[in-house]
Amino acid sequence: NSSWSGGGLKSIHSAVELNNVVISNNSSGDAGAGIHSSYSDITINDSEITNNVSGSEGGAISAGASSASTHSLIINNTTIDGNSSGYQGGGIWVLYAGDIQINDSYITNNSVTPESEGGNVSSAGGGLCAKIGANPVITNSTISNNSADDGAGIALIENANCTLDNVIISSNTTTDNFGGGMYLDGSSASINNSILVDNHSVNGGAIFITGVSSVFLESSLINNNTALVGGGIYQNSGN
Image 1 (cartoon, helix red, strand yellow):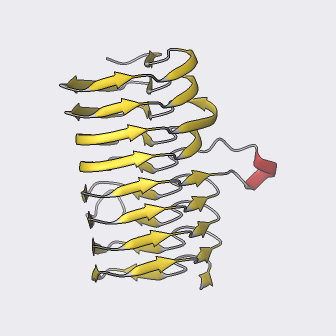
Image 2 (cartoon, rainbow, N blue to C red):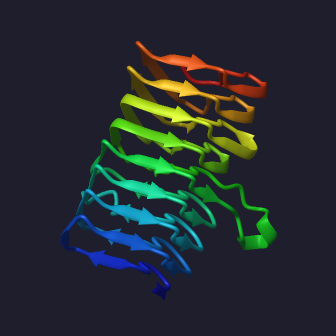
């Protein structure tokens, strides 16, 4: 299937629950090749979202609302694999506040490849990109083998706040700039009981921190990440 947005599913001001479904091989010119959610509550259980291609944000899923609205995206026991986008969030792209949960899931082999302006736009968030007040909580999950210019695994931009508990972030690679595992710009992350291993970037193999950002680490392992500068963590500013 193909469309301008929401190649597989488009939801506006709705509540949708998906159980044991496969959303695969869809395309969109703009956001959300697999699923495009706007002002909606989306729950996904025991499913696969694979090989979808978006021209802009959210190869697998694009979900957002305005700053004055809330929405939800709940993902349980789901595989998000092999999706791509042309700007941000090869796997998942979320915007503004809402109840955003990812549990017992795999976000793997997703990529962001800038296509606009001759490929001169920096891409972010190969696995997940969260922006402008989005607050994803990720538990018991794996984010691996994703790629982007910045934040191959996870990119947190403009006051996003991410909580990780028992998460593996591994073997993610930036194709150019910053943060193989994670990239934070004016955002924060709380990382508990998690592992960041075998990620690669030019700057900040595991984590790159810039802007007014903060990272809290507890009972976690950062090991065998590589970069030209800051193999583990590169803190350009922040706390």
